[in-house]
Length: 303
Image (cartoon, rainbow, N blue to C red; front, top):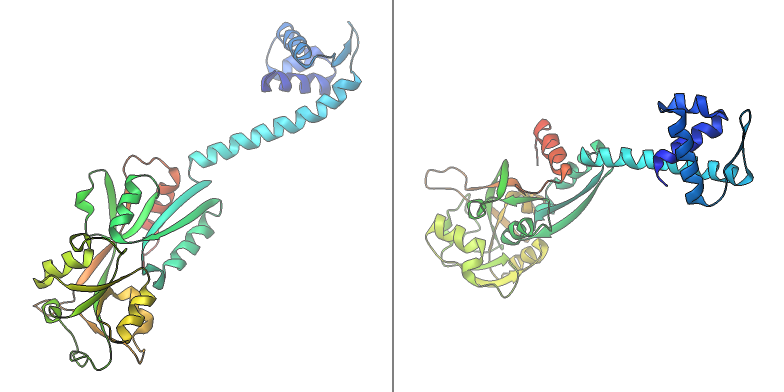
C-alpha cells in the first residue's frame, strides 16, 4: 500500500461514490477502482460494500478510514518538516568556540539567533584554537568562532572576519611591569607564561609561542598549561607567572584587586590585536549554516 492509495480510499469513503471520488482525484474511475481493489488485497479485508448503486464502508473500512486520515496528516507534516529542514529553518547546528570566549557577550548572539530560528537545535563545543579547526575538518563542528591564526593552513575552510580584539598582558600586583600603562611583546621576553592549552602538546604547537615569536621575537617560557581562563587568572594572581589574553577574556576582571591588566601595543603605539572569525568547511551542506551566516551578516556584530 502507498499514500496515493490511502488518498484514493479516503476520497471514496468521504464521497461514497467512485465516480465523484475519481473526479476529485483527477484519475479515471477504472484507475480508482483498481487502486482500491489493490489496497483491499494488501490490507486483507474488504473496506467497502458496493454494488452498481450503493457504496458504504465495512466495519473494517471505518477503522481504516480513521487511521488513514491520521497517516496522511502525519505524512504531510513530515513533508513540511523536510522542506523547512532543507531551507535551514529546522535542523541542528554544532558551534565551536574558542576557550575564554564564554566571557564575552557570545551568549547574547546565540540567544538572538535562537529567537530568530527557534527550531534549529544548537550544540556547543569549547576548545582551543588549533583543535577547533580540526573539528571543522572531521565534521564534529559545523561552524566555529575562532581567532584567525591558521586559516591559511586549511584549504577547504571558508571564513569570515567578525571582530578585532585588543590583546592584554595579565600580571599580578607587585610585578615589576604592573605600573606600566601599556607594554610591548618584547617587554615580556623573560617572563614565565601560563597559557590555555591541553597538557602534553609540544611548545611548537602552542598558539602563544607563534604569537610571541612573530610579534616579540622570543620563545615564551611556558610553565603551566590550563584548560580554563579562570584557572589561568587564579595562577597569575597568585604570582605563578603572567598570561596574554584577548580583551574579551578579561573584560570582567579589569578592576580586580588581585590582577593587573595592561594593554599590549606595537612599536607605533597602536594596539596589538587578534582577529576573530567565523569559519566553516566548504563542503558542509548543512542549510542551518547559511541561516546563521545570513543572520550574522544582517545583524551588527558587537561582541
